[in-house]
Image 1 (spheres, rainbow, N blue to C red):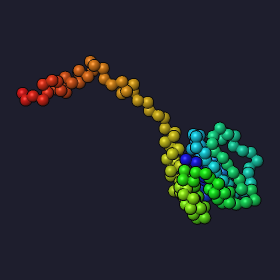
Image 2: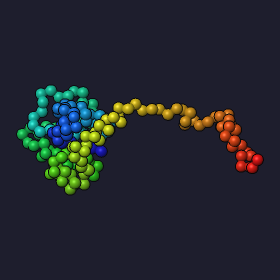
Image 3: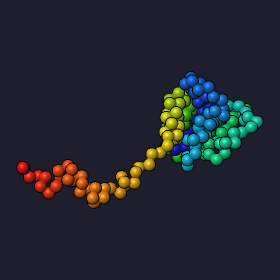
Image 4: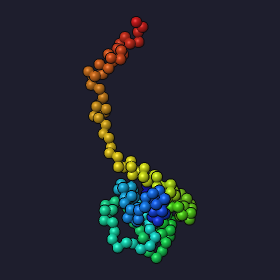
Length: 162
């Protein structure tokens, strides 16, 4: 699902959660979410920094700066322009943005509620995937199956009283 994030709100929520990160830190935290096919757009108030974060170039993370406008205006424009609002997730604590998201049928979540979800998603992505042993897919060999049947007493006469 595409995500639009009010960057300043998320920075504040992260600070309250004990993660004091700046704009680059927010972008770095969101980058793994944007490494798949879905897009993440984070909008910050104010001008863009002189140097962009080059490490994020290979992701679907879009970072917008509002310059002389408010970030809220840009977020509202993105919500209005979205062609599939029911798939869109809007992360903001701003009432006007959340109301506009709800009006369009978007999924909305406060920045404070998003922080623990973000950390959970990042933790899940960082865990190495455990491969199943090939034996699990192949099943037991006929010899192994026969041994189990014998050991468990499930032979042909298993249902008979002795």
